[in-house]
Image (tube, rainbow, N blue to C red; front, side):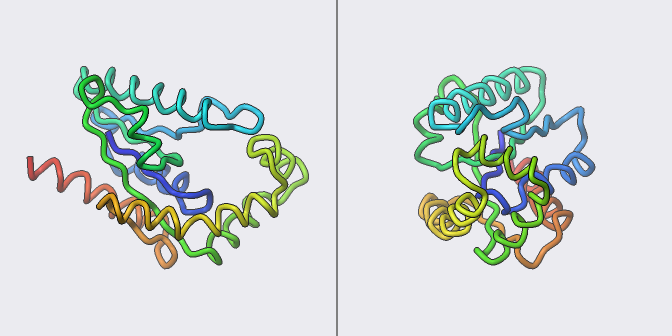
Length: 179
């Protein structure tokens, strides 16, 4: 199982679209963490339950010879509290990182309508400008956490989502070849 993390605006959703084109669907189940919906305000309890759901999905996939790739926010310490190595398939977290300026630019472009602005307020529990600043300011801290864990960090500022997807696919396929 591969868990592609990053703050909102780091490039997870865009990269997943390209990974679905690159990696064979008979071998990889590529999913968005939030695809089942986000309740009002999200929250830690929902996030932990959803993480467990995807870990169980990865276990089911592993039994049929498929790897699972999930794109969604995950912090290593939170993940470890839900992940049970004896029960779940081996999991690797990697981080997509972007600068605060890039995150601000991407997120401002993502919510152009009053409806989309209202939806992010509903899901995050905060107004759009605060949501954007929270993500932009947390990105360097999250990078530090992943680096401390020795996890792979991929910079997305100067790369297209297709280039990042190719980098991830090469990393995954390279690991399979080394086992």
